[in-house]
Length: 132
Image (cartoon, rainbow, N blue to C red; front, side):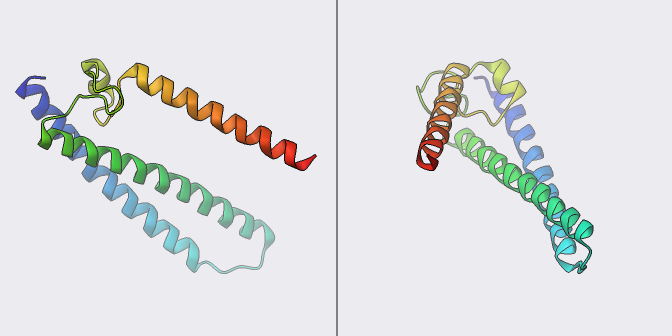
């Protein structure tokens, strides 16, 4: 990968990192405000619980993406940006343009996701069998 593309990737990753940190801070502040609300109304309690779940999911997803962005920045610094962590092949430049924090080539990503879906389905099957 040439120096200009790496420089652009670093700029995009740094910008995304900063933006994500601000977003996580806002969601943490919103979660703190929800904790301050006290009510006895069941509808309000359900709404507060739902809002907390949504904020938790957003926070968890944002934190996972933040970690991927940090790994991509480290890969740039170590000279390994654009290398697949699984097969050590080259990640397609179009993929990196779309997802600059991508850590795997498309083929490895698809295999990993398929394996996760399959293992998740296996666990669901085991849970169903244990209930019988």
